[in-house]
Image (tube, rainbow, N blue to C red):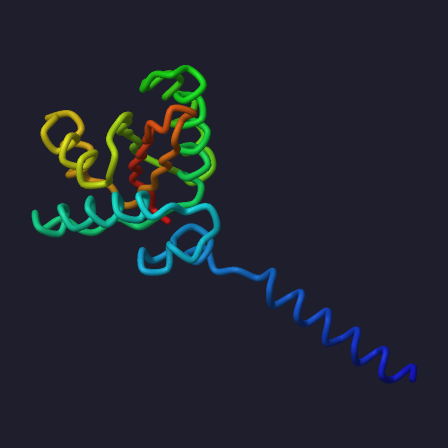
Length: 166
């Protein structure tokens, strides 16, 4: 009986150790084809990220990797915009500081929008704006987005890009 308990304990400890050990690349990036499996990821968000990467590839630019630390910042800011019923870049310096500290971001930019009903319309609007297009086509390595609806059913978007050496 004691032997069975000890063996069970060793197996449990091994499983915990294996599940807790990580490779940095797994922690910070997720291939886009797996993104829909993650909790709280909306189809519109996956579509925006795919459209941005498709555009980049069409311009011979590298596809960007998704980063979950960026997602924390896009989520917080999107909620802020909904609370204020306005798209804004308010407190961008705080998001940039967080990403610089937590993932070593060397360069950070963001695109925001609201009122667009689908991924194609918001990405097309960004591509028609010189400053937003520069962000989409910029020298970045990672990105992420949050899209949320307010109580009136309007979508709010925050999309952040970073250059990170992860």
